[in-house]
Image 1 (cartoon, rainbow, N blue to C red):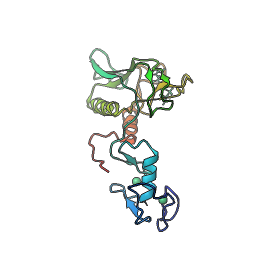
Image 2 (cartoon, helix red, strand yellow):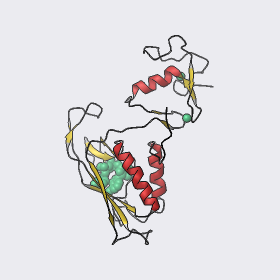
Image 3 (cartoon, rainbow, N blue to C red):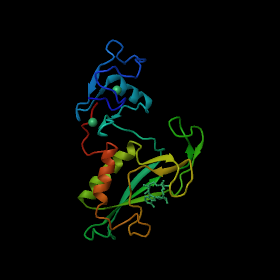
Image 4 (cartoon, rainbow, N blue to C red):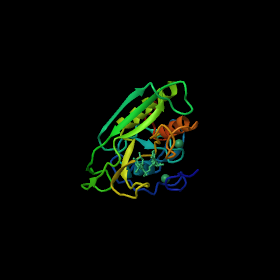
Length: 214
Ligand code: APR
Ligand code: ZN
Ligand code: ZN
């Protein structure tokens, strides 16, 4: 079998040099099997992949994308809060109220791990709102969105597809319903939304029960 990081056979030595305290100088063809998904790589290849990233304590299996450890993002500091609106409902959820989430982020200076360290970033369109049905499924998603927020995964700094502006705070692949109706196409009804956002959260390693130790 091949190691999918270097595309070479697992029987051959990793093409990544053993230039690190933790690499396997004594046994450069050591392989490692990830314990949840059972995918196998050269140890040195996986270490090189980890070292080329943010080194924040998590690894995503390059084969199946399973996340070991906890993945953190680079969302700037700000606030997340929510309230329950009992006097309205979302299309598709006529029997319950609405959870309204508020995110607020202010302009600031990019840190070393952002795209342009030292440069200003602009938080446009804040406060931003996200809407969920106030039922059991919606409350579950709210818990996951809180986890995502505390792990700094909700927004990132980059170029906005919508406005074309660089160095701005943008949504980070965890879609939110930013309106209750559907004038801009980012609201309700959308029978697939709760499933889809659950999948997006899982992709970031945000699940109800954390059992993804390295
Ligand atoms: N509501 C929710 N999600 C949106 C919206 C919107 N109005 N517009 C775009 N997205 C999604 C996109 O589908 C994409 O997946 O956010 C992701 C990032 O798109 P960008 O345009 O790069 O993100 P950003 O600039 O953060 O957002 C654009 O979202 O909340 C609004 O006020 C915000 O109008 C702005 C819009
Ligand atoms: Zn390899
Ligand atoms: Zn895997």
